[in-house]
Every structure is written in structure tokens, then in C-alpha cells.
Image (cartoon, rainbow, N blue to C red; front, side, top):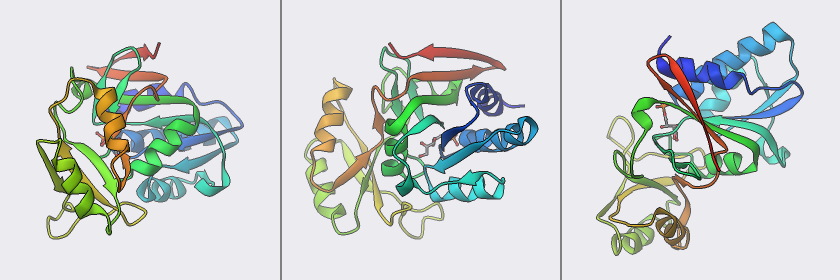
Length: 227
Ligand code: 5RP
């Protein structure tokens, strides 16, 4: 098992019977989805799931999980997702969004009674934005004006291309993603500033949302609690 799979297995320990579980997006979250399907079958659990992206929704249904529509739930018992960057500060700072669906990911994470962010050691950073730009979900009609405004306080801000590079990345809700780099001193102020820009539907900085972070390093999993 690689570290992504090991940390996903560790997150399965937090799954309880008769609950609604939110599923994240990405390769680490996919290991959790696979493991959850096996656990439900082996232990005859009654669990419903909701997903943070169309791709995870499809993966969950294909794995045989009982899927509920996002618009039918008010709260989630447990949300488990990967991340692009994790800063193990008091409030656990997280950067997400290589998978485009920022509205959906932050909505589920915020609605969860317990939010667990899982990752291998490569995700640990000393400053959010060290390894990746901050992604911003914006609508196709707003992107240009939103980009122009963000350019006033960013180093750069680019419309994300799709994986093939011949078109633009589109979220589950038909939105575009801007990838922006910033020089900043306080991530909380930057997060608030971004949220206030007209046209920003959601951005990838998750502050004070994760209750726990599980980090796998060479097969060993460490647990970090938000304080
Ligand atoms: C999707 C995300 C993912 O959780 C993040 O990109 C990590 O992916 P992986 O588990 O494949 O490394 O934020 O929007």
C-alpha cells in the first residue's frame, strides 16, 4: 500500500454506522471511497454518502455506495477529503482545488460535524501557496472582470486550462477556475479579501474547517487536531 492508501485506510476508523458521509475528490479520496465500500459490505453498515464532485459521485455509485443528492441534506456526520497543501497550524490551513469543485468541497467540509483532511507527507507546507497557486471558482460570465480585479493584488492570475490543454477547466456546475499566486503576510486576510471580490464563487483556502488532519509518512500515520 502507498501512503495515500494507508492514510485513507486510517480515516476509515472514524466511520460510524447510520451516518451520512461526505466524499472528497482526488486520488487519496478515491482510496477512501474504495475502502468505505468494502467496510460497509464487510461490516453490514447503513451509510449514505454525498460527494464533493461529479467524478466522486460517479465513483461512489460505481462502488455500490448509497448516494444522496446534495440538495437533500442539511448536515454531514463525517467529511473526508485530500488536499494539495496542508499547514499544520492551530486551525489547520488547507489548500484545495486541483479538482475544480471548490463550491462543493467547501460546502461539504463546512457542513460536516467532523472534517478530516488526509494526505501523504508531500502535502505539508510552511506557507499556503508554496507549491500551488490558489484556485478560485468563478462563473463563465464573470471570469474576466474577476481576473482583472484579482490582478490588482496578485502576482498573476490565469484561467485554468483542461488537462489536455485544448480548452478550459470546467467545474461540476459549469464554472471556470482562476489559478492565482499572491505575495501575502496573513492568509486569513487574503482569504477574506478573495471572498469579497465580485465574481468569486469560492476559493481553495480552507481555514478553521478541518477538525483533524491525518498524515502518512513512510507507512506511519500521524494525527493532528485543530485547536
Ligand atoms: C481536489 C482536491 C484534492 O483533494 C487534491 O488535489 C489532492 O488530490 P490527490 O489526493 O490526488 O493528491 O483538492 O479539488
